[in-house]
Length: 144
Image 1 (cartoon, rainbow, N blue to C red):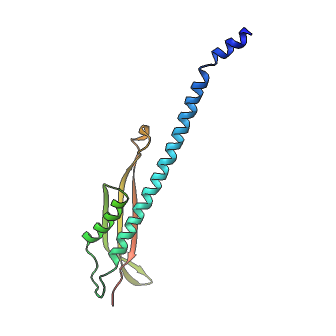
Image 2 (image 1 turned 60 degrees about the vertical axis):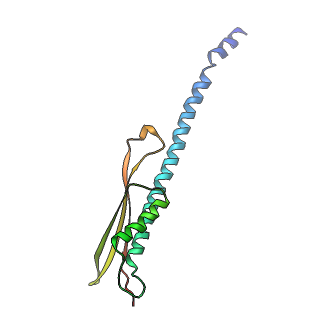
Image 3 (image 1 turned 135 degrees about the vertical axis):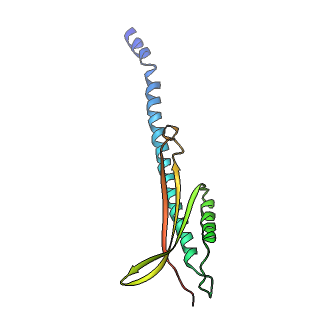
């Protein structure tokens, strides 16, 4: 009887240590999944913002052939990024971008949005950083 009591007394702290190790692993996995989801979401927002900026950039005012200025394009793109609460982005507008297909040259506009992405949820990985970019290339339209 004494050996059973003595064995259980020796094992008393093991359950707490095992629980702490399992909980640590679970939390790292949980925060890793959250960070991966955030990473993909930010990438998608950057791509959508570039697409929105390019859409505005290639559509002239009704009944004219006047395309929006780069400031107007940046403003629309930044408004899209602000709605997703993304700050410190770089927006570049390149126009005209000549594209030749079967000997026919067509003018395009390229909008590129970049962001220095930093890991937010796990402090032990706070030094990790990468540059995410979204880009859209659309053909300039003309109005009759």
